[in-house]
Structures are given as structure tokens and as C-alpha cells.
Amino acid sequence: MIFITAPPIDEKLTLVPFQMLMNSISVGASAIGSPKDIDYMLEVASKNNIKPMIETIDINEANVKTAWERMLTGDVRFRFVLTGYDKYFK
Image 1 (cartoon, one colour):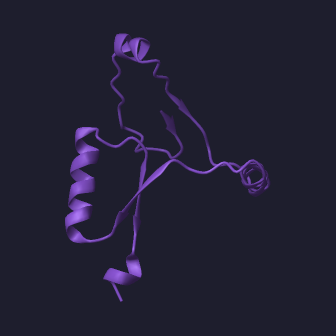
Image 2 (tube, rainbow, N blue to C red):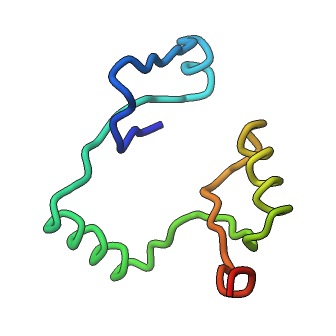
């Protein structure tokens, strides 16, 4: 788990070390890189055909509800990407 944004200052994170150990889970944080760092990262990804691991979902009320429920139950393996905006919101 890598935090890339700053949560509210009073936000707490509760961890169970044994579960982290048994599942090889680590926690870290990173500030967004500079424009130069971002350009370099995108260039490396492009040259090496590196693509994000995502699950696309058509954006509509039923699918967003299902995606939200799956997120709450931990049934999301990759990032959800909502697609079909023009189809549903012309």
C-alpha cells in the first residue's frame, strides 16, 4: 500500500503486524513527482509497453453501485475505471 496523497492530519492507520507479515504487505508513501520525473516515468512505460492493471466498468447507476459494494467488501483486485461517459451522459 502506497499513499500518494496526504490524508487529514488527524487520520489514523491501524495495522495488524502479523497479517502484514503473513501476506507480505508493506506500507509506504510518496509525494507526486516533478514534471520531469513524470515525463521520465511515462517515457519508460511507453518504451517498455507497461500498462496499468485496471478493470473497466460502464458508468451507470447499477454498475457504480456494484463497484462501490465490491470496493467495500475488498473484491477489487485492480483499479476500477469508469467508461462510457458519453453513452450515458450525452
